[in-house]
Amino acid sequence: MKVKYLIFGLILFLAVCIITFLVWFFVSLRPVYNNKMVALEIEEGSGYKKIAAHLETKDLIRSKLAFQIYVLCTGKYGQLKPGQYLLSGDDSVQNTISVLTTGKMRNYRVTIPEGLTIKEMDQYLSDQYAAYGLKMGQFEAISNDLINVGQLEKDFPQIKNEGLEGFYLGDTFYFVDKLEINDLRLRMLENFVNKALPAFDNLPVPLKNNYEALILASIVEKEAISESDRKIVAGIFLNRLKQGSFLESCASINYILPQVKKILSADDLAINSPYNTYLYPGLTPTPITNPSVASIKAVFEPTITDYYYFLSDSEGKLYYAKTYEEHLQNRSQYIEN
Image 1: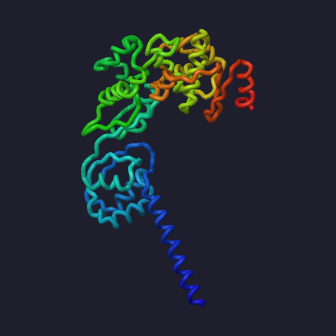
Image 2: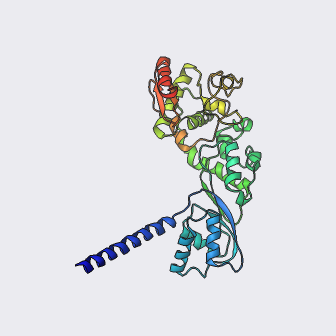
Image 3: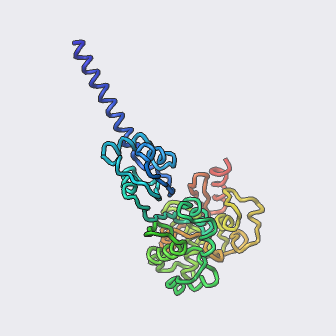
């Protein structure tokens, strides 16, 4: 009996070890998910162990050991070729190996989040895609170039004077062989035409034109996160506009500040600027960011309520109020405590 228990215990131990190894192995093959492109050079004569260590150092894989085991098991260990590559931590080990076996530099892929200002996009591109040769100031320098904007200039004549803030729609873009910043700029504007422009329909009262709708969408973008909140906030701002009231959007002031602040000071609220919606009624002169399609749709499909006030806590949760007294109570309960 003791022998049977011993054998059973050994089998159980081995099974646990195998399962533990398999869990570790497959988890280690998952992408790093760092949302960053990295330039990698594999030198002539580099073996799979050196390549694995190089990939781990560059934060392109989770585990050099798991990488080594995978290429050995798949027979790819002798097929990894020297060359210059552009790799992403968002790729799986399998995809990374597929690129490394070609010996060719991969095509360019750029992912830009929705809801960034032009300045924020410029910073993001220089931070995340330096491996592509993108530098600080490049995108911002050409961001208001009206050459080849075509459809946009017809539908939004205001851009001749006000520029293109609001029209750059983030997405994932692919480029073959080379990436030029102006090509990226035009692709983002084209993305707006294809995906955002169809949402401009049945202009809500009291907005006078589609440019005003875009401005309002940009404010909604910075004030709310979820789809339902965006629609409610859009309805609140429309209620205020109908009354001729101040929008009192902190996001509009942050647009003109050197750095975004979570809490504005009294001096910030007193800045004499048409972007200060605490001092100037109505909309800001231009969009204050490049809004997502969701925020644009929220303006054209708002949730109309009796609310006239809202505020958000540190986690971005919104609290609504019908009267100023209720608004002050919300501030006391959810913000100041």
